[in-house]
Picture 1: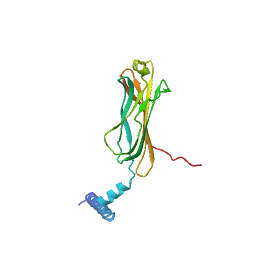
Picture 2: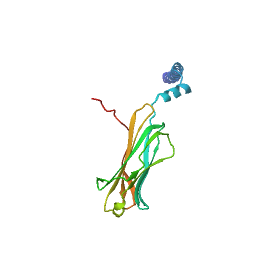
Picture 3: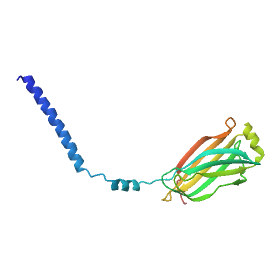
Length: 187
């Protein structure tokens, strides 16, 4: 046996031993670390704060009878209930506020996750419907919801929509969901 063969044999043994050492160290590390149990995982998940998340969709502007109506659907898409939900609706025409003759603004004590969507709607003066549909005036709608999580932390979600005379439907301009409301400082 030549010297080069012995050297190759020693290198192979060294690699084999190094591989065994790595496996043994890995196994001993796994045995010494605390076990992850299903109970521990559930406890960790329960410790996480899970917030509600109110989302708006399907904004509409339409003529019904002798009235112009704006409406939108909203729902809680978060993992936990939303409490003390207060909705609000503002409508402007060419950047001027439009008086809402009748609306469905309300306080809802609890909005559960993935419940049937609710509708927020307002009835507007009919005088400007044709001007909006023809594109002579720009209609903008703002929908908002303020709510709390189980710990009483306040959140707000809102979306702004504008009516398109081309599609004859509102399109989303801006949306902010699940924004934490900072508590006001008392002076």
